[in-house]
Image (tube, rainbow, N blue to C red; front, top):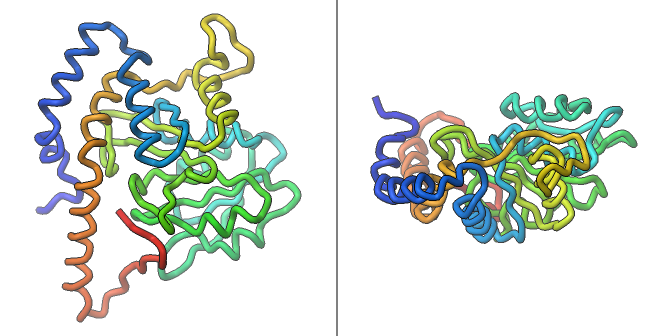
Length: 275
C-alpha cells in the first residue's frame, strides 16, 4: 500500500527542529500565545504575501470567524460550492446564516463562478470560493460583485493564481489539519487577511471577544493556536515550497502515465500554480 500522505516521512525531516522548539516552549511555559505563535503568524503572513495572519484552533473556526468578521449572521445568505467538505457549510450555519449551494465546473471541480454570481441576492452577505485539490478558484471574478469574499484555503497552502496567493486581496481561512500540505500535530488553523480591521476583529473574536485581559467587548470564542502546534508549523513551513514542488512533479508523472488511458483527470486553470 502506498499511503496518500506519509506523515512519518514528513516528521522525520522536521523532528530535530520540533524537539528544539518544544524545548523552548517547555522552558518558557508560554503554551497559549507567546513568541512561537507570534513568529509563526509573522512567517506565514510573509509566505502568503499578506500583512496579517491570526492563528486559531482549527480550520472550521477560522472559516466561521472570517465569516462573522465579514458581517455574516442571522437573516443572511452565503454562496458556496456544493463540492466541498462539510466544514464550509457548517461554518456558515454556525454563524447563523443560510448556505446557498451552487454547482462546480466539471473540468476543475471548482466553484462555477457564473453560477455563484447568479445566486447573489440582496440577502447575500458573502461568497466562499473553495480552493480545492491544490488549486485556486477564480477569485478575481468574484471580487467585482461587491460582496465580501471569504476564501476557503484549506487545500492550497502555497498555491497561487496569476501570482497572487489566497487572501492577498481580501480574507482567507485555512486549516492545518495533520494531513494538509502544511499540517500540525493536531488541530490548528489561521485566517490571513489584507485588512487590518478584519485581523483585529478576528483576533478579538477568537480570544473571548477581547484583546485586553478581562476586557470582553463582544461575545467571542476560545479559539487560539497553541505554542506547540506553532513550533511544528514553523518547522514545516520552511520546507513547504520544496514539498509542494515535489507534489507538482508527482502530479506531472501521474498525468504522463494516465494520458493514454480513458481516465478523466482534473484540469488546472490557466494562471494557476497548483500544489
